[in-house]
Image 1 (cartoon, rainbow, N blue to C red):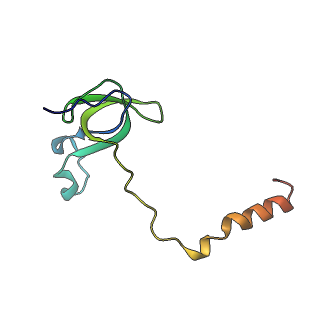
Image 2: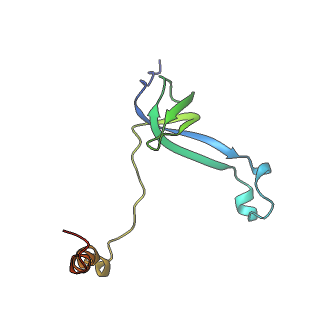
Length: 104
C-alpha cells in the first residue's frame, strides 16, 4: 500500500498549463506538438499520495494545485562552470563602494 505524504512536506507537483491544441499559433511546430507543462516545488497543504491531485504553498506564498510527483525534490539546475574573470568582482565592487562612502 502506498504511503500518504504528510502535510508540510517539501514536494513537487506537475500540471499541464496548455494542451498542444491550446498553444499560440505562432509557436514553432516542434513546440506546438507538446503541452506546456509546469513543475513547482512547495509545501504540501494536506496529506496526499504520489499521483493524486494536491495543493502546495510555494516559498513565494502562492497556493497551486497539481499532481503530486515527488517528495523532497532536489534542485537540479546550475549556473555552469565558474568564470575566473568574474570571481573577483564582488570584492572589487565593495572596494569601490567604500571609496564612495556607500558601505562599511
